[in-house]
Image 1 (tube, rainbow, N blue to C red):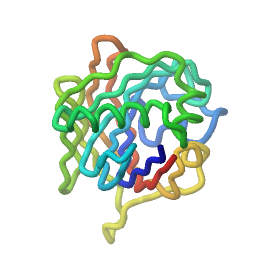
Image 2 (image 1 turned 180 degrees about the vertical axis):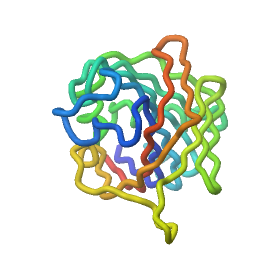
Image 3 (image 1 turned 135 degrees about the horizontal axis):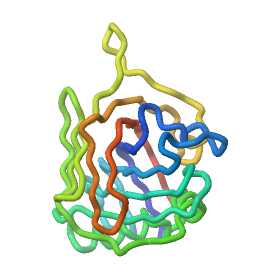
Image 4 (image 1 turned 90 degrees about the vertical axis):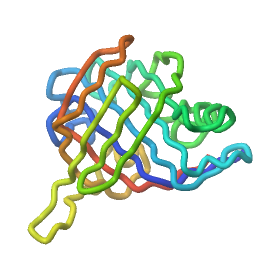
Length: 200
């Protein structure tokens, strides 16, 4: 059954701003390896007839090198405040089992999936964006801005094409910490913010 999602994608990782992986397979992550998280703040959407507007989910993953090189290990976190049906259908979509961009993108770069977890996920908005996932991860994200207060943005990178993102705001996330016991612990200062509309 068809699905559609509209909302904000918030990405943050172990590199300094801006993560080189956005620019394509020829670049090298700051530490040789890359680990990161993507928060999905869904404003509206439907999957298998289930309304997923207002839901939140986070994908965390790690790679031995550049994102485009694949061989990644990943896990999905689904907000404990969502219903069981919402978590079920979002896990299927965001892991690539329901087609659309996630099937091709994650199928190419993730070779190992850890079991999904249900944890409280909070996304706060103010002068900064904050993301928290239970006791596993936290990020404080501040967009780079010019003197007039306009957010700095980038268009046309290779990874933006993969995520179907026309433009991304570049941000700092100096207070980011991630510590899933089954994955590499990391902290970093690279973040991006995207407004997205996806379907499958």
